[in-house]
Length: 364
Ligand SMILES: Cc1cc2nc3c(=O)[nH]c(=O)nc-3n(C[C@H](O)[C@H](O)[C@H](O)COP(=O)(O)O)c2cc1C
Image 1: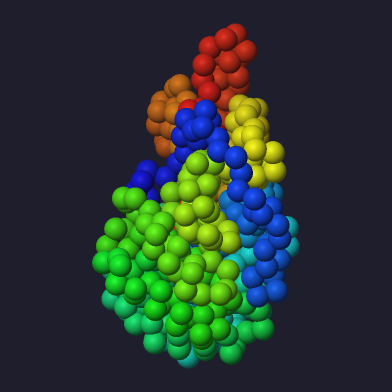
Image 2: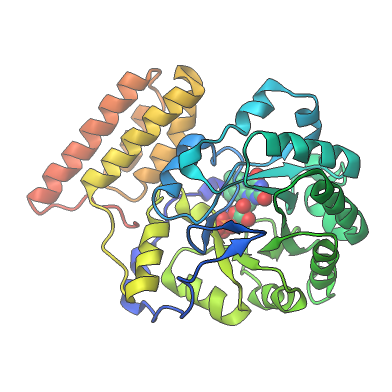
C-alpha cells in the first residue's frame, strides 16, 4: 500500500477467518510510567494525524495518539505553524509528539519545548524515508548511525522528565545484517523508554511484505516495550504480528484512515474473540460530519475543506456512487456545501440500504 492509496482496509474480507484473540493483549501497558489506554497505538502520519483526527481515534480506543513529525529546527525557532502542529487537548491523552532532527543539542532543546506544551511522550523519528529529511542525516538516515541516534536520544532524555521513545524501520536497504538490533540496543542504552518498529527498510518505503522476523529480532534484543507496525488491517494481521514477533503492542497507521473504528473493533475482538459488525451508515455519516467540523475549527474554512477531501474519500471508499461524490466534493469551496453533500450522499445510501440495495462500504 502506498501513502496515496491510504484508505479504509478491506477488513471484512477477513471476517470468515477471525482467529482466536491473543492472550494478554488487554493487560495494561506502560511506557516510561505513562499508562496507555490500550495496546493499539495510532501511528504518526504527516498530513493526517492532526487534532480532529486524533480526537476521533482516541475516542475509539487508540491507546495513544501521535502528532505528525515536527521539525526540531522549526520548533527551536518557535515557528507558529510548527507550534500549531503540536496543539494537543486533554481528551486525547496520552499523546506523543514526534520530532525529527539529527543534531543532539537542538533535539534536546526541541524536546524541552515539546514537553512544555503538555505532550506525555516525545518520539524520535528514525523512519522517514523522504530525501529532504534523510539528506540532513535525520529520519531513516539515523539508522545508519546508531551512535549518533544514541546521542540524540540521550540529549532528549536529559532535557525532559517524561519518556522519550523511538520509531524506526528494520534497516536502510538490507535486512539480516543485525543493523536493526544494533540500532535498537543503542537507543535503549541511551535511555529510550520504548521502540516502535515499522517492518520495512527505508529502501522498501511503504510497499512489500512486512518483515515480522526482523521485528521479532528487535523485540528479543531489548528489554523495553516494543510496538510492531506495518500494514495491520485485520485481526489476522494483528495476530500474525503478535505471535511471530512477541511485540508488546501494535501501531496502526493507514488502516485507521477513514476507519477510526479499527481500534474499537480490534479491542472488541481481543475481549470476545468476535469482530463486531462494521459501523452503520448513520455512524459513518456522523463521524465524517464530526471530522469535518473539527477540521473547520482547527484549520479554518479553506484549508479545512481542502484537508477534508482526502478523509472524505477514505470514508466513502468502496461505496456505490463514491467516485461521483468525491468528484463533486473536490469542486466545493465551503464547509457548508461539503456538509450538505455528505448528508445527501449518506442519506441516499441509507435509503438504498433500507430498501435492500447495497451502498455499504467494502470495508469497515
Ligand atoms: C501519509 C503518511 C504520512 C506518514 N507520516 C509519518 C510521520 O510523520 N512520522 C512517522 O514516523 N511515520 C510516518 N508515516 C509512517 C507511518 O507512521 C507507518 O509507520 C507506516 O505507514 C506503516 O504503518 P501502516 O501500514 O499501519 O500505515 C507516514 C505514513 C503515511 C502513509
